[in-house]
Length: 77
Image (cartoon, rainbow, N blue to C red; front, side, top):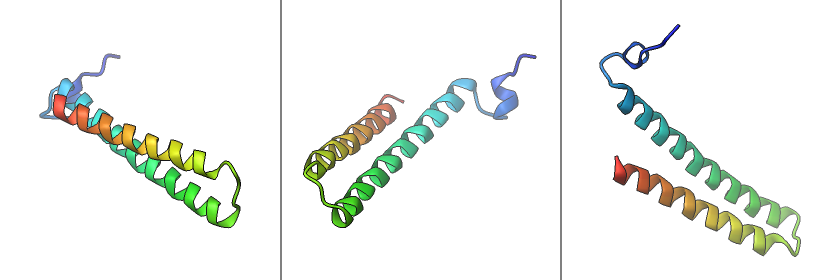
């Protein structure tokens, strides 16, 4: 059975549906990166380790990359 894009999203082309799903997934990725950063902050308060500054740095980089990719994809579309 072949599923047509119009059957999934009536009135929208398949390309627009794929773009919308991609942007939605990237927004979820950005929210996930913010949750990870918050978890690292809470972990550092509750159980301080020497690794905490490195983890916080990596989480900050992850937030930046997630935001940059989201903005790049929105700009391209």
